[in-house]
Length: 420
Image 1 (cartoon, rainbow, N blue to C red):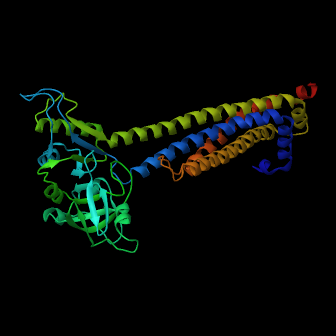
Image 2: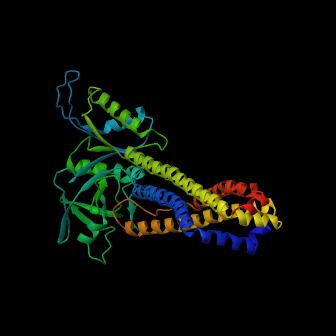
């Protein structure tokens, strides 16, 4: 190992590099480009991954929405175009017959699907806001961040049909003074007084909700708007290990059975599968990571082979010099080690430059995407992955260096001294 710290060894290495500056720079760029591509692509894929995880952090990843539409096929005496309506009884049947379901929340809303929003009044201030009738289970599927001192709808609210509500942060700003605490206060929702029990912070993701929405107990909503057993739509979360596409198909099949719909009727029930969208995005990110690995390694390999070629040319050009060294007593291992060290040195320098350039590029991408609407966050490559890539480069540099090194020691001193 002493040869690594030998001043003469490094003088010869730098002397060799100095003689072939242009070739060396071009080849180093090849290796640098390989590690740069790997870091830039895999870091970008991770940023996409992080962004969508952040966007979906308030909603179950394996969730879906299902609603009733009209039939497009006749069935059991029923004509085409029959308008369907989800019912509360559907929830129990689905829970019993679809094992993939973890949570299911029936929901109703006013002011969301084209109908007029509710008029909400507090003293002299008023506004129009969407009203949602919900069960507490909804927060197991889509998290609602409630400000300190408040709460969401609970089971007692449902059982006792309480006139309580959770308002949005925009609703608070528009209906209350800045120094006024809304918790415990009363507001009029379509001329009915409701007590505020919580204020929710708006977190976008997987729905139609806004920062002005008002949530009330499902049973209270039913009484206020006379909806009876009707359900607007179902928000469903499947288990994490469930096939979310199959779960959606099973839910629709059960609903068709309940409502006497032709099993082949694809228009009867509408749905949006958030889990399927999320899985596609995650699949794309994983594909990008794999692609970055393949392209990066291929480019690094090409660059390292270029270093091997430079050293082969260098050895040929230094035949006489190597012969003199051998004649003066240099052992084959000393000559071989110097050539290999030169190969590894060039590879590592190129690798470190590529890592620095890649990290700078990811930092630049992060600064441009930070705080934007596009789901992208913290594009990074784990340190072990970077060190692993560098280790692979060192191994490749060593292996490729063996070829010119073997060529160097195969030269007989007497032949080398005759070389002109």
